[in-house]
Image (cartoon, rainbow, N blue to C red):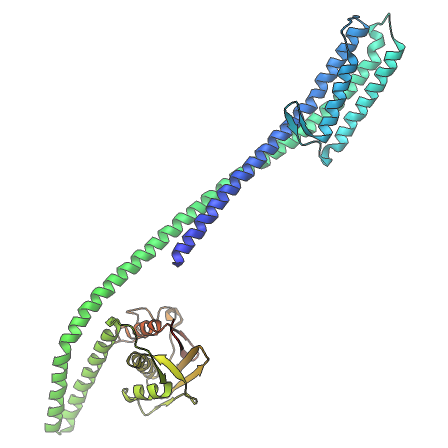
Length: 414
């Protein structure tokens, strides 16, 4: 479920990123188009100014009756105002002059007003016998107006060029981010499949080991019982001290083998716990009765008894494993302290000892199957404990200084 959520989150992020990228590019392309239109409108001033001067010459010098300089002057003024205000005109849409280029536009407008004033003066003064010399003042005004318009066009062109360069950088960045997210998604999926494959392979191996171990354990129980009974008979018959030491060695070996078989059987057994409310101290005492505790190790039980909702047989397996682990960790003289606390919803049990502790590199692996710090351990004891606690809907964790196992079990099951 966690892996599915991770993949879904990355895919959702990638889809949103792609949509955002397309929308951003579309908006910026539209912005570029509008800026291009603005340059075209600004460049139109030069054309209209030239046409205006042509109309003046046609009317006052060539004397063509259909000439109309005033109309061209009006078109030029409208184009200048459209350039500032923006909007839609003759199918062309522009945003209008920004504050950054307002001074340049004002220079164009100023030159236009000067041109318009000069033309009105020219119109009043000249009616006939016009020469090219008389047109020079008006030509000068036209030249200055075109100069101002060209400056505006150049500045707007530089803005478009900078915007286009930034746009290209943004496109490359968005492409890089999309590719990076895609690569991350592929790597996450590959890693998930690798982990799943490794986990499934490990589970298959554990299942095969469990099945084989279960059969071997079942077949070994009767011979081990027979050997144990024979040892007891031989001990009663032979009272020599040297013989007793040999019999004790055999008994200890049998006990170790029996314990390892029990670890295997506890791990491979899978059944739902049969839950009932029990007093914790009673369960602990019954568990301690089944363990051989050295005289040099002192065990303290919780001062206040609490209730625990559990399967009695399964939870005793957990306590026995915990206590045996503590005894083996202490080795000689030390203590094991068991504390408990409860709330309306949970029972918490802490088992700590004065042992040598768990190496830091094993803290997060100690509950994995086949992980053991014992020379003769199976690596299944703590794994069995975790399975049992999980089946109770609880949690088990460990920390050092001192080594403390914390078990939490709910008091109710949904």
